[in-house]
Picture 1 (cartoon, rainbow, N blue to C red):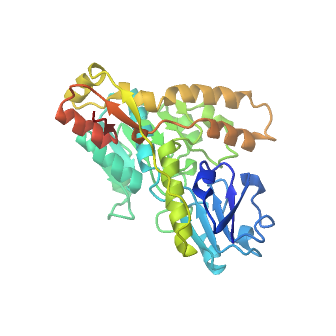
Picture 2: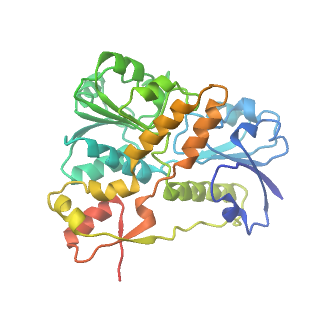
Picture 3: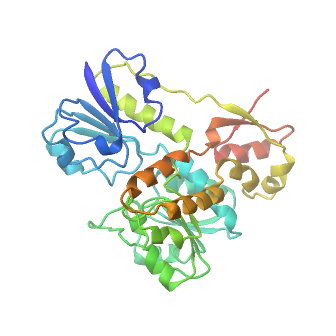
Length: 365
């Protein structure tokens, strides 16, 4: 029997393991996942709240670790490789969800010139979608292209900026505090890592608007960072049912493959039908504008921001702040485009293509 320890806040675990004959599943909260609790465990399934490194795994039996995240900055691959532990992430699992969040954020501006920092899964997807909607896009990614500081400065001069860079303090292209100043008329959206953007410096030097979903030293973040943002959300850009299903399917397949099993259940999204009045979106689509009226139904992040700021303000002590932040984050699961099939009567074929590009499915009678 293969013993698996998993973060209890990973949803749908029971469904994946319910018919398993090869795995024994144990669930603990993220702060209970320690080297001691892993001593007799064969595999770990975790979230970004758990750093995967030598301190955690040394002296344990763990041979496989799966992080249900798209980012990997919480993983020390050098240390896990030395311990001969195979570590996998779910890269790309939430690219659609993060794109949806950014589309909602763009509703606060009439500008159509966007600079993208980092052209990975999300950056590439966002570029493809927005260019089809007549946005002028310029990207900066020195890992993919021969981009230099001039390219970065050109991108940072755009009125809209979306950050999707990996995080590093050292190496050839360090991204720590990569962005520390903006102009008053700019809007920056950060869904990658808080430490890439120096929120305090920007707030002190300009009146640029910040829409932030990630924070410095998360989850033990500085509440002052939140107070001064135009919009703040508790790391939920990728927090949709669809993204979570994608992540769990990716990691469970890798777990089965590592132990040479075919025992875990693959989850399937059962789409719900959503009736949409074509009049509410036709004008936008006919003018090749993003249908913000529809997008807001799935990502009402302005409302989420108001609730988040209020809840954080009401936490009177720092003693349990980490737990409170995780609790707030968990309470906000957004609807994903792929969870619904749109029933839109008499919609043009060109409009169907526009909606499909955004990630919507059209309901067929």
